Amino acid sequence: MEKRLSVGIIGCGGIARGKHLPNLKKVDEVELVAFCDIVKERAIDACKDFGVEDAKVYTDYKKLLEDETIDVVHVCTPNRSHSYITVDALESGKHVMCEKPMAINTEEAQKMLDAAKRTGKKLTIGYQNRYRGDSMYLKEECEKGTLGEVYYAKAHAIRRRAVPTWGVFLNEYEQGGGPLIDIGTHALDLTLWLMNNYQPKMVVGSVFKKLGNQRNTANAWGDWNLDDYTVEDSAFGYIVMENGATIVLESSWALNSLDVREAQTTLCGTQAGADMVDGLRINYVKNNRQVVEKPSFNTGGVAFYKGNKNTPDYLETRMWIDSILDDTAPLVLPEQALVVTQILEAIYESAESGKPVYFNQ
Image 1: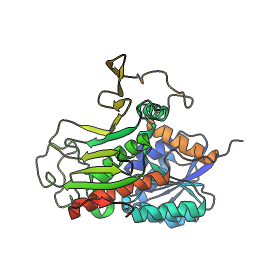
Image 2 (image 1 turned 135 degrees about the vertical axis):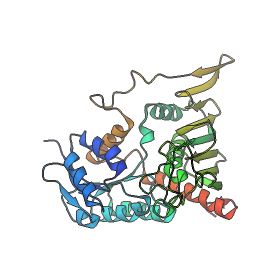
Image 3 (image 1 turned 180 degrees about the vertical axis):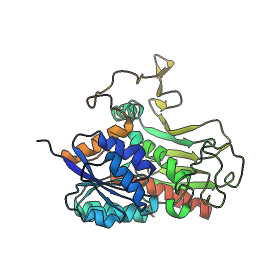
Image 4 (image 1 turned 120 degrees about the vertical axis):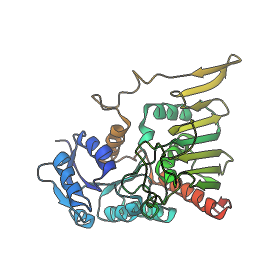
């Protein structure tokens, strides 16, 4: 018989129901056996929709962790609780996938990494944009050296008017920030991963709340409650790596700009460049001519798994479960996710102090 993993979900809100639960349900080797949420009705509903016949419901995550038959836990709670729930889950003998960002600051992220090393359990973070077809193709090209040395990059996470008005997205205490920590984190993770560069030297940051106090905003999800809006509406970072490579990170939920791009990157190397403006484009010189190459992702490519399931969300789940079954490293390493958190925290710190933040000094 194939091995089956018992999985528990902590936090049954939008990200659990929209990404984690439906994709875990598609994996034959997974049984969804436990559901926890501080709002009991949410856990009950998730259990009815996704759980096995005798699945259990909890409002206290520590009670869920007491179940020794659970192999894996997915942490889908607000950012502030990522660290301590993940640490407790690892200490209880569970492998953990935690939603992005890893934690609200470097100190909390380090606790998670230390717990994973101490317990020997696997830990990964939910950066599903790595699993897109264009991302994986570009990663392969980077590893082959097609771009040469990548020394300049942009991480794009710009929305024009798309502030999330539900849940605790606007709550600085619960989330640790706004668009920078919400969607900027995806763009930065993607860029660092493609560059394979995790050694930041210096960061300068700017953080703005210029549109958050306005009404009649034409926001995609309607106007927000002004009293609830305690985070930035845009943030920008200038990141210099130890080898001199430079990254510009731009993030916004609300910005008067038509250059709208999210979870994208631009890479400039010594041999070629790449961007995701109109699909994936790789630019280079050939026969003394400027060339632009645009791979198609409509057909072909690697058939990772059977069936029409090769969406980034599913591949993230499938490859995570396989890393446990096969005892291999997950694609998103906690050491990498910690550097993302480290840089995001430095951008906030620099913006508040008005000074650059230096690492390893």
